[in-house]
Length: 110
Image (tube, rainbow, N blue to C red):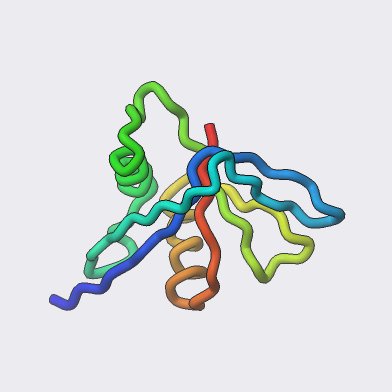
């Protein structure tokens, strides 16, 4: 079985601001975090697995905090946030970032 590695960079806790027609992410602390997955398929990175890994990285209790995951697709005009709500959204995000090799970050807020 062949495995591939997937790196996801994310900002933790911030907000969106309108900038003309576009939307811009404003991080609260300016730090960038990374999580690493080694899987045989992108399908193995599910919404719950992604949230679990973010919570583990940030040492937060997923039962007490509601995670809002989003990103700004670089090909969409005007720039606006796209929310990740389920497994399908995670796969779209991963395909956008990994397969198409567009550079973007995953954003998290409460």
